[in-house]
Length: 448
Image: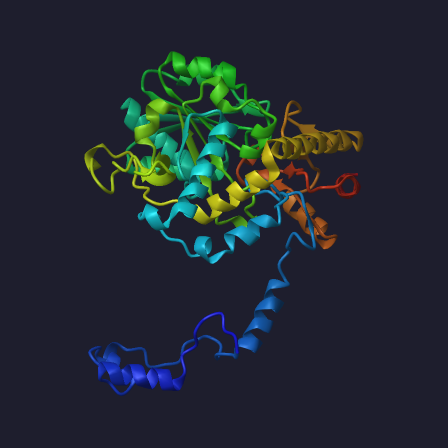
C-alpha cells in the first residue's frame, strides 16, 4: 500500500519505547505531576480512517466558493489570473518542493539559479537595478521599504497615500510603532493621491512617500509629478506596484523611484484564500547593501564555470546588527520559483499581451456599466479594477450574486466609511465577454 507519509504501527511504537527504556507512552511523561495533567476527554471528533477522513475533507472543501465553479470579479490585491500548467509541474519536483535555505551553493545550484532569474525578471519589470530573492508578501515588502527609508535618511516620518492597500497600511503602522516612526496619510481626490495636500505634508522630516501604482481603486497615479515633489525634499520615493500591470505601464524605475515593492501573486500563485504570497523588493544600486532579505549573485568557480551564490550577506543576523534596518532573514523561495516559471512560460510578449487583455477587458466592463446606468466612480485611466456605486449594501449584493455562481467585487465600505455601497470590481484576462455582460446585467437588475 502506498502512503503519503510513513505510518507508525503498534510494533514500531513498541520497538521505539523499548529502545529508550520505557514500556508505555505514559512513562514518557511521568515527570509531570498528575494534578496538572488533563484527565478528561478532548472536545474533538474520534479519529477516522484515512479513507473516511479524506471523504469528509473533500465534502467540506466542496462547500467553498472556489474559482473552478464560480466566476470571480474579486480583486483588491489577490487576483484570478491564468497560471501556465507547467508551474505546478516544476514547483512540485522534490528538489524544489523540499528545498531549504541554499547556504551550500555546491548542492543548491538549481534553487539559486531560479532565485537569480526571479531577481532579474523583477528588475526588468520594475525598471530597477537590484532586486532581492523575495519577501513574505506585498504588505511586508512595503513596510520593509519604509523602514529602510527611515534608516537611510535618518528621518522619522513616513507619508503614505490613502489609496495604498488598506491592509498594507496596517502592516506599515505595525512596523512603524516599534521603530517610533510616525505615519501620515495623504487623502484621495478623484481616486488618486491629492497632490496639493502631499506638497504641504512632505518636508525635511519626511523619510519616504509611499504610493501604489495602479492604486487600490485601480487608478494610475501621476508618478512623474509626485517624484518631483518628493525628491525636492530629499525624501525617498517608494512605489508599490502590481507587477503584471508593468507589462503595459511605464515602470516606476523610469520615473525615478528609489524602491519598488509589490506582490508577485499575479504570476503563477493561486488565490488560495489570501496566501501564501511572494513579495518582491527592488531598489537602485546605491541602496543595494541595505536591502532586507537575501540576494543571489552570479559568479564563476575556479574552473571558470558559471555559478550562483548567496551574496552581500553582511546582514543583521550575521554582523553589523547596530546598523540593521530589518530583521527579515528569509524569503518565499517556492512561490518565487512559481512566479519565475510563470513569467518564463509567458515570456516578454506574453506578459505584455496578458496585461493588455486586463486593460482592454476592464475598459469594456467600465463602459458596459455606464451604458447600464450604473455610476462608475473615479472615471479615468485604470488597469484592471474600477469602482461602481450601488443602491444597496455591497454585502447584500454579493450574497445574491453568489447564489448565481458569481463572486462579486470588494466592499470598499469596509475600509473607507465614505464609500459605503461602493464596489471595487476586478476584471482579469480570465473573464470572458459573456461573464462580464452577465455581471453587468445582474447588477443592473438589482440597481433598477
